[in-house]
Length: 72
Image (tube, rainbow, N blue to C red; front, side):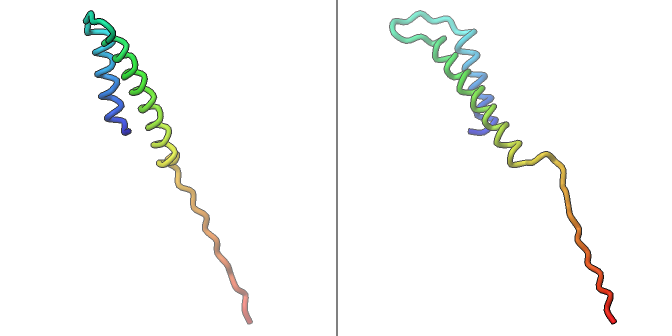
């Protein structure tokens, strides 16, 4: 799951959890919203962790080894 999908899940989950008020028997839309919100936050955190581990810290370290020969 990418960061874009996570942001969509967070937006839909927040809308269902906080903006929608529906009364039904056996099915709670607000609970589904909180579940989607949690999954979206978890997916975004996981994406950021993997993104930073693949991208590195931005520094490039190079090691140059030279040899000099003092021949006859």
